[in-house]
Length: 424
Image (cartoon, rainbow, N blue to C red; front, top):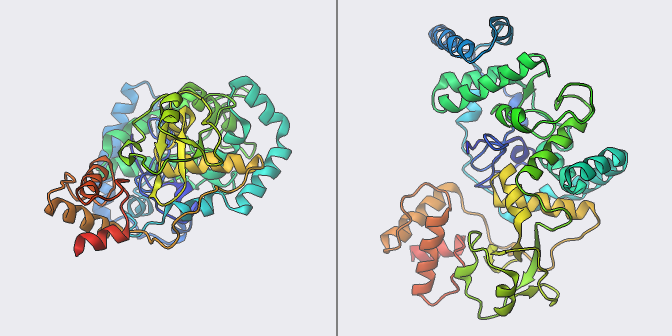
């Protein structure tokens, strides 16, 4: 999956490593997902003459590719009229946030009182539409609402960059040429079908469009005409088609109706934290045998195989996550995003905060500090297979091995206190 900075992440004012927004699936991002907010306001320098000449050469070559794929010359020429290199897109594509926020800070913003109250207002306003979408696709209406809230704050910020210009800039820039050209062909196919005009085809700098931020290839595969007007219009002020498209996407990847994304749980004191891994999905009966219960002490409910998630290590809320958690991650491949969508949906439905408290005194590591942590682990014989500042499976494995070597709880959590310990 192609990952990008996203609208949802920048709307939230954070960059949590691992976020995305559907690109070939549906989103795009490394610490975010398909969007940008205030950064758009900054004026970008104009393209230089030599750059414009090179862009014209790329455009002419790409035109041949597009026509060979069945795009009509008139469609291409109208879409590319007045399209040049966007310095704004280049700047945003190259922006990598140094500082990140903790999961609880992300969730505080993502599921804020305002976000929840607006979601409830939209639920009332669009009750008939949402009920019809839920009945047709068997995807919970509050989850569809939650995705809408996360992606564009219920349509209040959908991005205003011309999709063709944004993707053409990414393709010309070359770092993601194959991806961007594939998305461009899809965008031109959408224009050729008449679902939208080039002027209205706008969204994030990374190419995600509409109320729920579909990439062009995902649009072609999953977008729905739920209004019955003959167009799959995710750009309209009316979000109906976009909401239905989101439901169709979640259904396609196996959404389980009336089942949770996860439940907050309590772990026994002797729990083996090396088992707390999203890839370690076991039957509920297996977790019950190990003493896992709900956070209130009730038997763990059975919604199929589950994994144990410890997003703040052993010192914060713990969850048993089910299939719907993984389905949300198909929309945006980030743990933080999946939790936020699920938790926001619960709050819109009247739910409250998690029972266990977050370790709010634990500060977030910057990207450079994460690299420092990775180098320190490797130097002590616990290889992270590189120092890229991204806490992935290799780094978590190395942290756990280090913790086990010192008879500590092996939760694999990359914390500031762990970094200090390694430095000593």
